[in-house]
Amino acid sequence: MSVTIYHNPACGTSRNTLAMIRQSGVEPDVIEYLKTPPSREKLVELVKALGISVRALLREKGTPYKERGLHDPKWSDDELIDQMLAHPILINRPIVVTPKGTRLCRPSEAVIDLLDNPVGRFVKEDGEVVEAR
Image 1 (cartoon, helix red, strand yellow):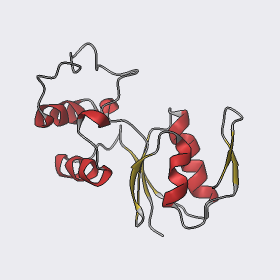
Image 2 (cartoon, rainbow, N blue to C red; image 1 turned 120 degrees about the horizontal axis):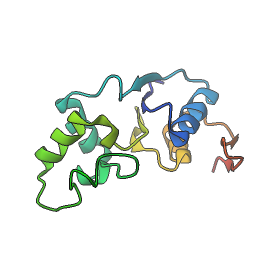
Image 3 (tube, rainbow, N blue to C red; image 1 turned 135 degrees about the vertical axis):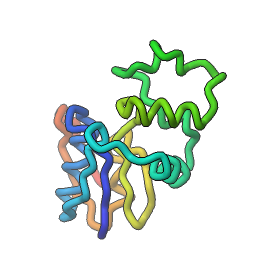
Image 4 (cartoon, rainbow, N blue to C red; image 1 turned 90 degrees about the horizontal axis):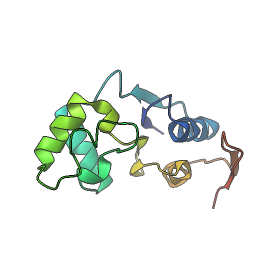
């Protein structure tokens, strides 16, 4: 199974998601999107595959979201994409792409349905136990 994760190693949710993927027996293609941001075309493709609005992919916490006034509905999708490309930290994470679909894995256990062989039980960094359905 081919798996790609758009990952931020500083994010606990992203680290937990990556660990669940690896524990399923897959070594994913890990894209540290802060170091290697997606192209405009790839970002548009991801939004479409996620089935969400561009605005829904914006991350607010720990980003220049407020200082740039991105809460204002005046921003078009193209302008929001421009902002995400200029400031990749605005892209919410982790995004996981598999043959079963593309998903923003918040919470991290959202990745379970995308994997062929998810682990039955996973303990997150904070001690929370996740049981596969």
